[in-house]
Length: 529
Image (cartoon, rainbow, N blue to C red):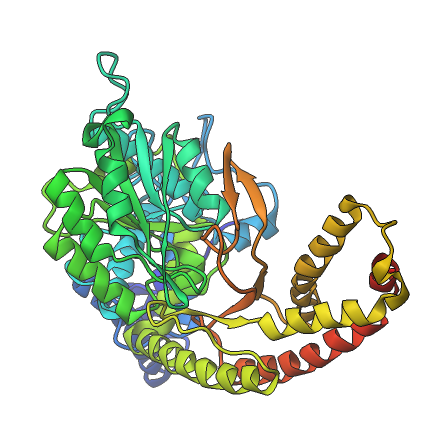
């Protein structure tokens, strides 16, 4: 399938000839219209930043088609005799990718230009520039060159950690412990653990500290793990991995304090900023962190921050870094890469423009406050409360303590009182009863999901989970013994006031339905009797 572009074909000479067929006034009007679209591209290439206002779909598609015409697979009369010639069998696949089939980068550098694909190379470089500008608008200042990779956050973290180990002199035969471990502030998501294990590094988990309702960074624990002489001390640490975006009641890590600590002790520091770009506070904290201390790289997701399909991530370092880790990462990427995630981000940012991007960010901040207000009211109606987590600007959590207490009461009432004095029940049955009472609250999330509410997480204390050879007690809460069960919700980019209103209405109904269901649960009554 070949791309065509009317504006590319209408040269001044062809326009002059067209005036012999159609009224010159009409041809002039048409050429002026195409010239206005051309000015959009001229401005984009000269300013290399987000356009002030978003482009219309036709302008974006025309631009992509013209770039595709610069790749060798769309050359007129091109004959490809190599093993990789961007051959695509299905016209549907070709249209889906705008005939951009060469990918990006070369075997030695994922950001390098491709001789066969000038158009794809141009699109890739523009994407990196626009993403860096989008970060600036979001509040992430002093940001160096952005690197968009066709890997989701977890795999990108693994690649960054491999590069970090190399930068710290790891894989040393004379000292195998050098840069062999990662000190990680606990965040109960399997991806984080797998990213470290996948990089062949040893994981040292720094526990969080409970302060009121909130789990905050335990800087003393981080320092102790770095300095531990039995583990090899600072020389054995490739980096500390902190996290900014997470499920409440865990707060964003104190990245400024960690950055200062890493600069003091001279160890690396990687920030997992998965969906933190959408928060002005988080972006401000990262800016302070690399101004006041050490931050080697920051990793963020494309889908969570830019409203595109899953499949990409962005790595950035501070602009003042003389040898930014992003350079090592792009050179460490093996082979060429898919252009699809970059293209999705580019299309979206062109469609939004700076004004649209700012509006989306502002809307999210407003809806976060709105969700807090609504959940506070709804929780109060059902006897629960919103947990106080001022250090988390995206996620929030509501207790399920009253619900759990009600279930225990229901379970007690459904049993046979005459059996209370019986000694026939053995210890194992008593343990099973207690387990059933404690874990039944987890089905609250299933009821929400079955009523078309997605994204909530129900956490019940006491769950043990093994991930990557590490056992976590109280998994899900980022804490061994969080005191209450709860569920989470997030006011992430794209959520609307209408979403919040419908969610809270359904939430209130599910609380009532859940209690009603519990009283009729024959399995519970059977267990208790």
